[in-house]
Image (cartoon, rainbow, N blue to C red; front, side, top):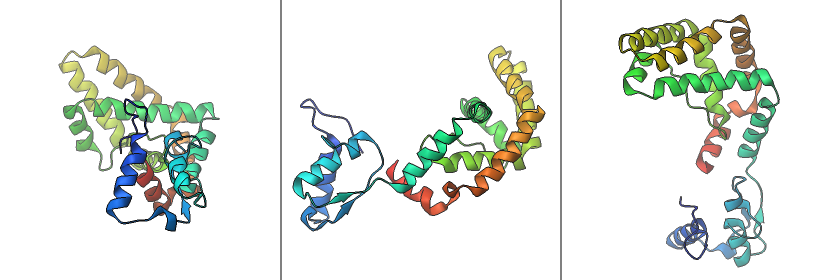
Length: 205
């Protein structure tokens, strides 16, 4: 959906929703509740979708999205740990490295069955999947990095060699391996692993 204001600074998302409601023949006067993510374009009390709906029907109670709120809480909690920040930053670097080239992505797919996902700030499920993929495919991920390093050396790509060797060096440390195991156990306990919660969040992202 387009959330960009037009030349008159009118929130376009609100207009888009109005048009769809008209097409679906949904009367806002018959609505009793509304729920969105925590973005200002949705939850804003002075402008945005919530305000536009309330202007039409002031009895439509707005409840923040529980799924997205929970994902944000878990994400903020993870940021409180230096180890956690460094760990997930390395996972993102790993994804960025292989996804920066189609050929490099193919090298990863040749070695692993489940790839490391791009880490989302709103969907904790992506991090859970990445941690699982790493724990159960650690040797294969190391082999993929070694293969990429060899390929980069043949192409005389010193920057890729440096990045790949740096990630590989960190992945081989005891602290990293231990944190993979701990993180996976933590992920198994978090409510964010619930498929229904993440499907709900995905619809609002």
